Image (cartoon, rainbow, N blue to C red; front, top):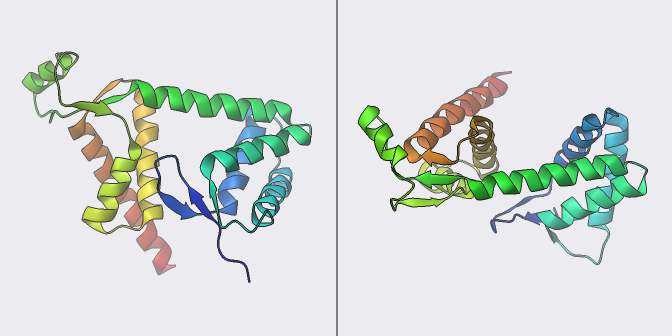
Length: 193
């Protein structure tokens, strides 16, 4: 019996390897080049998973290694355009993350918004890091790591889509609470089925 492969994320956290995430990643990349085919995505994901589980009996892999293997499989199977799109998407997200800063401001009224406008020169700023959301949800609210990562990813997508580079901490809190409520509601509904 094989033990579950662990993935070491860029932020240092560890989660279980999910074959379905690889299918989703490949499927999205194929869709971006107008060659969406879930059967092909599943077959290519099988290659990635097989390779990861049958290499030198290692039980962990970095997320960057998984990413590189997915790109190699796409390139080796005549889906090089999908590998390129995947790389561009990856670097675009890294660039967005590097440009976003969180400002320790609780915006409740217009005067607070003026503080945000002057935050360019003030302290109390830090780089965007969705792993902080995960850590808070796990330690303060006892959510499982996987649920916390899902919520943090949902919040990150909203922040990215807003196109802002200075994000008030109060906005992040509201987004986390809203997305956490939606995820927990969905989990409860699934349990009643």
